[in-house]
Length: 164
View 1: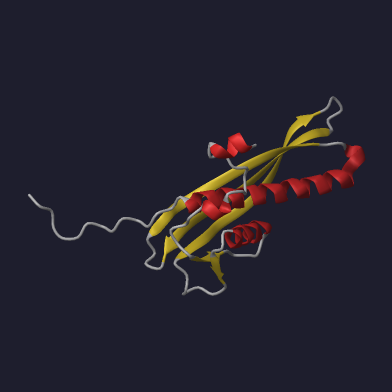
View 2: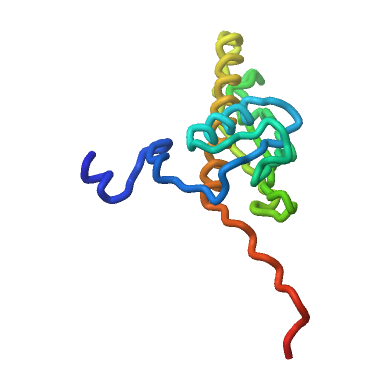
């Protein structure tokens, strides 16, 4: 393992001390307190960022524009019973500063998982479906954290008239 860390490889979630963000405080503007927003807040706190409870004091705002789930039948057996579903999770968000300049324009994160299904295990499959959705929400929050880590303040617009 020593040789892997020497080359800069880190396991997901490790190496948090070396990650630097271009902001120190953030506000999450979401329509509801979901598993996604909870995972996002946990991740932000893990990186020692201040997660503000009220809008106004933050350097950056992450606005959750939409969050949705969908379940599609992908396979049926010979007798017409479902044997497989495809679960979709989508979240659309943007990040902006106090001047409403976009640091991250509206962005969609889309994830999917396959859920094998068996009608004799209905309760177990319902629990598995809930776990898969929770896993997708956590995965989406991790993706947002990685994107936020690479954000830079937007360049100021060029001022003055055009030079000939």
